[in-house]
Length: 244
Image (cartoon, rainbow, N blue to C red; front, top):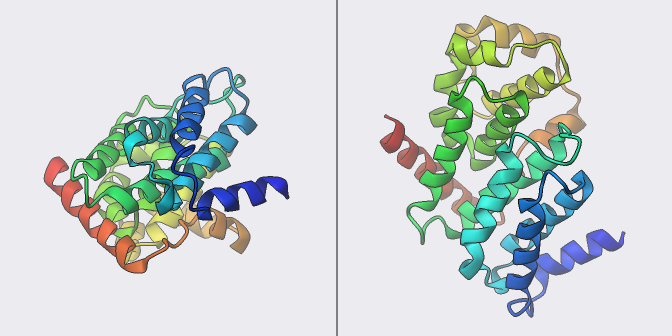
Protein backbone atom coordinates (compact mmCIF):
# COMPACT_ATOMS: atom_id res chain seq x y z
CA UNK A 1 0.00 0.00 0.00
CA UNK A 2 1.00 3.64 -0.33
CA UNK A 3 1.31 4.02 3.43
CA UNK A 4 3.77 1.14 3.66
CA UNK A 5 5.82 2.57 0.83
CA UNK A 6 5.98 5.96 2.54
CA UNK A 7 7.02 4.46 5.87
CA UNK A 8 9.61 2.28 4.14
CA UNK A 9 11.00 5.41 2.51
CA UNK A 10 11.16 7.18 5.88
CA UNK A 11 13.12 4.25 7.32
CA UNK A 12 15.64 4.03 4.49
CA UNK A 13 16.07 7.29 2.56
CA UNK A 14 19.28 9.17 3.21
CA UNK A 15 18.11 12.67 2.26
CA UNK A 16 15.61 13.25 5.05
CA UNK A 17 17.81 15.18 7.46
CA UNK A 18 16.37 18.50 6.25
CA UNK A 19 12.69 17.62 6.56
CA UNK A 20 12.85 15.14 9.46
CA UNK A 21 12.69 17.79 12.24
CA UNK A 22 9.62 19.35 10.64
CA UNK A 23 7.94 15.95 10.33
CA UNK A 24 8.68 15.17 13.97
CA UNK A 25 7.34 18.57 15.05
CA UNK A 26 4.11 17.97 13.12
CA UNK A 27 3.67 14.51 14.62
CA UNK A 28 4.28 15.84 18.13
CA UNK A 29 1.69 18.59 17.59
CA UNK A 30 -0.87 15.97 16.54
CA UNK A 31 -0.13 13.86 19.61
CA UNK A 32 -0.34 16.91 21.90
CA UNK A 33 -3.96 17.17 20.80
CA UNK A 34 -4.44 13.43 21.32
CA UNK A 35 -7.86 13.80 22.90
CA UNK A 36 -9.17 15.47 19.75
CA UNK A 37 -7.39 13.43 17.09
CA UNK A 38 -8.66 10.15 15.71
CA UNK A 39 -6.86 6.94 16.62
CA UNK A 40 -5.93 6.52 12.96
CA UNK A 41 -4.22 9.93 12.95
CA UNK A 42 -2.31 9.08 16.12
CA UNK A 43 -1.24 5.73 14.67
CA UNK A 44 0.14 7.45 11.59
CA UNK A 45 2.00 10.02 13.72
CA UNK A 46 3.59 7.27 15.84
CA UNK A 47 4.45 5.19 12.77
CA UNK A 48 6.15 8.21 11.20
CA UNK A 49 8.23 8.91 14.32
CA UNK A 50 9.14 5.24 14.66
CA UNK A 51 10.26 5.05 11.02
CA UNK A 52 12.42 8.15 11.39
CA UNK A 53 13.90 6.82 14.63
CA UNK A 54 15.04 3.74 12.70
CA UNK A 55 16.74 5.86 10.04
CA UNK A 56 20.19 6.88 11.26
CA UNK A 57 20.55 9.22 8.27
CA UNK A 58 17.51 11.27 9.30
CA UNK A 59 19.50 12.84 12.16
CA UNK A 60 16.58 13.33 14.55
CA UNK A 61 18.84 13.83 17.56
CA UNK A 62 18.10 17.59 17.86
CA UNK A 63 14.37 16.88 18.27
CA UNK A 64 14.57 13.91 20.65
CA UNK A 65 13.36 16.15 23.49
CA UNK A 66 10.07 16.49 21.58
CA UNK A 67 9.82 12.98 20.12
CA UNK A 68 10.30 10.99 23.32
CA UNK A 69 7.58 12.69 25.44
CA UNK A 70 5.15 12.45 22.52
CA UNK A 71 5.82 8.74 22.04
CA UNK A 72 5.54 8.07 25.78
CA UNK A 73 2.21 9.90 25.80
CA UNK A 74 0.85 7.35 23.33
CA UNK A 75 2.12 4.52 25.53
CA UNK A 76 0.80 5.54 28.95
CA UNK A 77 -1.71 8.36 28.44
CA UNK A 78 -5.03 7.90 30.21
CA UNK A 79 -6.99 8.98 27.17
CA UNK A 80 -6.23 8.63 23.47
CA UNK A 81 -8.66 9.74 20.79
CA UNK A 82 -11.98 11.55 21.16
CA UNK A 83 -13.76 8.36 22.29
CA UNK A 84 -10.99 7.25 24.65
CA UNK A 85 -10.53 4.02 22.73
CA UNK A 86 -8.53 1.15 24.25
CA UNK A 87 -6.30 0.81 21.21
CA UNK A 88 -3.69 -1.91 21.62
CA UNK A 89 -1.86 -1.37 18.34
CA UNK A 90 -1.28 2.33 18.99
CA UNK A 91 0.26 1.71 22.41
CA UNK A 92 2.31 -1.21 21.09
CA UNK A 93 3.77 0.80 18.22
CA UNK A 94 4.48 3.76 20.49
CA UNK A 95 6.27 1.45 22.96
CA UNK A 96 8.42 0.10 20.14
CA UNK A 97 9.20 3.63 18.99
CA UNK A 98 10.40 4.47 22.51
CA UNK A 99 12.50 1.30 22.60
CA UNK A 100 14.05 2.21 19.25
CA UNK A 101 15.06 5.61 20.61
CA UNK A 102 16.62 3.90 23.64
CA UNK A 103 18.57 1.57 21.36
CA UNK A 104 19.86 4.32 19.11
CA UNK A 105 20.61 7.06 21.64
CA UNK A 106 20.75 5.46 25.08
CA UNK A 107 24.52 5.15 25.14
CA UNK A 108 25.05 8.80 24.24
CA UNK A 109 22.50 10.16 26.72
CA UNK A 110 22.87 8.34 30.07
CA UNK A 111 19.65 9.78 31.53
CA UNK A 112 17.48 8.62 28.63
CA UNK A 113 16.84 5.06 29.78
CA UNK A 114 16.24 5.97 33.44
CA UNK A 115 13.64 8.52 32.33
CA UNK A 116 11.84 5.90 30.26
CA UNK A 117 12.06 3.36 33.08
CA UNK A 118 10.67 5.86 35.61
CA UNK A 119 7.72 6.70 33.37
CA UNK A 120 6.75 3.05 33.05
CA UNK A 121 7.36 2.28 36.71
CA UNK A 122 5.20 5.18 37.87
CA UNK A 123 2.37 3.87 35.68
CA UNK A 124 2.75 0.35 37.09
CA UNK A 125 2.93 1.48 40.71
CA UNK A 126 -0.15 3.69 40.66
CA UNK A 127 -3.11 1.43 41.42
CA UNK A 128 -5.54 4.17 40.38
CA UNK A 129 -4.31 4.23 36.79
CA UNK A 130 -6.76 2.73 34.25
CA UNK A 131 -6.04 -0.60 32.61
CA UNK A 132 -5.07 1.07 29.34
CA UNK A 133 -2.19 2.80 31.11
CA UNK A 134 -1.03 -0.42 32.76
CA UNK A 135 -1.19 -2.24 29.43
CA UNK A 136 0.98 0.48 27.87
CA UNK A 137 3.50 0.30 30.70
CA UNK A 138 3.71 -3.50 30.46
CA UNK A 139 4.29 -3.57 26.71
CA UNK A 140 6.65 -0.61 27.05
CA UNK A 141 8.90 -2.44 29.48
CA UNK A 142 8.59 -5.64 27.45
CA UNK A 143 9.80 -3.76 24.36
CA UNK A 144 12.95 -2.75 26.24
CA UNK A 145 13.94 -6.40 26.64
CA UNK A 146 13.91 -9.32 29.05
CA UNK A 147 16.28 -7.80 31.61
CA UNK A 148 14.14 -4.69 31.86
CA UNK A 149 11.15 -6.99 32.35
CA UNK A 150 12.91 -8.81 35.18
CA UNK A 151 13.88 -5.55 36.86
CA UNK A 152 10.71 -3.50 36.44
CA UNK A 153 7.78 -5.89 35.99
CA UNK A 154 8.49 -9.09 37.89
CA UNK A 155 8.85 -7.52 41.36
CA UNK A 156 5.41 -5.99 40.90
CA UNK A 157 3.84 -9.12 39.46
CA UNK A 158 4.47 -10.82 42.80
CA UNK A 159 2.49 -8.08 44.52
CA UNK A 160 -1.18 -8.82 45.19
CA UNK A 161 -1.96 -5.12 44.92
CA UNK A 162 -0.70 -5.03 41.34
CA UNK A 163 -2.58 -8.18 40.34
CA UNK A 164 -5.80 -6.92 41.91
CA UNK A 165 -5.42 -3.60 40.08
CA UNK A 166 -5.83 -5.37 36.74
CA UNK A 167 -8.27 -8.02 37.94
CA UNK A 168 -11.43 -7.03 36.10
CA UNK A 169 -13.60 -9.23 33.94
CA UNK A 170 -13.51 -7.40 30.62
CA UNK A 171 -11.48 -7.17 27.43
CA UNK A 172 -9.12 -4.60 28.93
CA UNK A 173 -8.17 -7.01 31.70
CA UNK A 174 -7.60 -9.77 29.17
CA UNK A 175 -5.30 -7.53 27.14
CA UNK A 176 -3.28 -6.66 30.26
CA UNK A 177 -2.93 -10.29 31.27
CA UNK A 178 -1.96 -11.33 27.75
CA UNK A 179 0.76 -8.66 27.68
CA UNK A 180 1.87 -9.63 31.19
CA UNK A 181 2.01 -13.33 30.36
CA UNK A 182 4.11 -12.68 27.26
CA UNK A 183 6.44 -10.38 29.16
CA UNK A 184 6.91 -13.11 31.76
CA UNK A 185 7.44 -15.72 29.06
CA UNK A 186 10.29 -13.62 27.65
CA UNK A 187 12.24 -13.92 30.91
CA UNK A 188 14.02 -16.95 32.32
CA UNK A 189 12.23 -16.40 35.66
CA UNK A 190 8.85 -17.48 34.30
CA UNK A 191 8.61 -20.68 36.44
CA UNK A 192 9.31 -18.67 39.58
CA UNK A 193 6.68 -16.06 38.75
CA UNK A 194 4.02 -18.64 37.91
CA UNK A 195 4.70 -20.52 41.13
CA UNK A 196 4.34 -17.37 43.24
CA UNK A 197 1.33 -16.02 41.35
CA UNK A 198 -1.32 -18.74 40.92
CA UNK A 199 -3.72 -16.23 39.36
CA UNK A 200 -1.35 -15.52 36.48
CA UNK A 201 -0.54 -19.22 36.15
CA UNK A 202 -4.23 -20.08 35.91
CA UNK A 203 -4.98 -17.30 33.47
CA UNK A 204 -1.99 -18.16 31.28
CA UNK A 205 -3.07 -21.81 31.12
CA UNK A 206 -6.70 -21.03 30.31
CA UNK A 207 -6.17 -18.19 27.84
CA UNK A 208 -3.47 -19.29 25.45
CA UNK A 209 -3.00 -16.75 22.67
CA UNK A 210 -2.86 -17.85 19.03
CA UNK A 211 0.62 -17.58 17.44
CA UNK A 212 -0.34 -14.52 15.38
CA UNK A 213 -1.31 -12.57 18.51
CA UNK A 214 1.87 -13.62 20.29
CA UNK A 215 3.96 -12.32 17.40
CA UNK A 216 2.07 -9.03 17.50
CA UNK A 217 2.61 -8.48 21.22
CA UNK A 218 6.24 -9.61 21.27
CA UNK A 219 8.81 -6.85 20.70
CA UNK A 220 10.47 -6.96 17.29
CA UNK A 221 14.20 -7.69 16.99
CA UNK A 222 16.40 -4.65 16.77
CA UNK A 223 18.53 -3.82 13.78
CA UNK A 224 21.53 -4.94 15.82
CA UNK A 225 21.37 -7.79 18.29
CA UNK A 226 24.42 -6.52 20.10
CA UNK A 227 22.90 -3.09 20.51
CA UNK A 228 19.69 -4.58 21.82
CA UNK A 229 21.52 -6.70 24.37
CA UNK A 230 23.43 -3.67 25.53
CA UNK A 231 20.22 -1.70 25.91
CA UNK A 232 18.66 -4.43 28.02
CA UNK A 233 21.62 -4.60 30.38
CA UNK A 234 21.87 -0.85 30.74
CA UNK A 235 18.14 -0.44 31.41
CA UNK A 236 18.33 -3.15 34.05
CA UNK A 237 21.34 -1.57 35.75
CA UNK A 238 19.91 1.94 35.72
CA UNK A 239 16.48 0.82 36.90
CA UNK A 240 18.05 -1.20 39.69
CA UNK A 241 20.09 1.79 40.76
CA UNK A 242 17.08 4.11 40.83
CA UNK A 243 14.45 1.80 42.27
CA UNK A 244 16.55 -0.38 44.56
